[in-house]
Length: 115
Length: 111
Image (cartoon, rainbow over all chains, first blue to last red):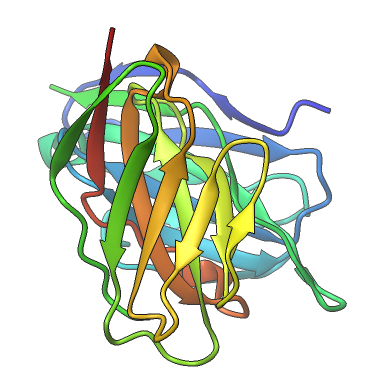
């Protein structure tokens, strides 16, 4: 049981490049989330999903896109990287339903630098 | 979700209890108090949560005042590995997607 796995762990992008941050969970959680954390700051919600095929914007969605084609995977896409997207990105998952709500489990993060 | 107020930082001696306060004066009846911590830029880790009764698990205890306007997370015997940023979050359990993190309290455990 690996929990929430994020890849890559580190990445340097040039301005204007694109990339996809991968996130996978093996806990059969229906909820998945993407957060970003700037240095010395708290986490800000980018996008979330309540199940396969359903996604919605969080607090800071501009410049990002997501998809949720399966329960397990929730990739985050950066189309035109900008220096303001330099941050640490965390993926998380949780389960809600049938009277049960679990806490959120987080991945170890992807450290992205845009130069 | 109700807003929370936490001290920016606090120090604690190794082996002593660490008491982390959190104010949430606008909490509503269906909102729980959650605590997470983040160790050195790792992903946040769930610690404990409660509604109105005091809660204890293997990591910590959570004391919620009778009026539910504030709470205290207690680490009974702090170790150096407890050095982390601790986040107090208030939310209704049905709103999983609204897990909103503030700045938290930076706890430094000193030998």
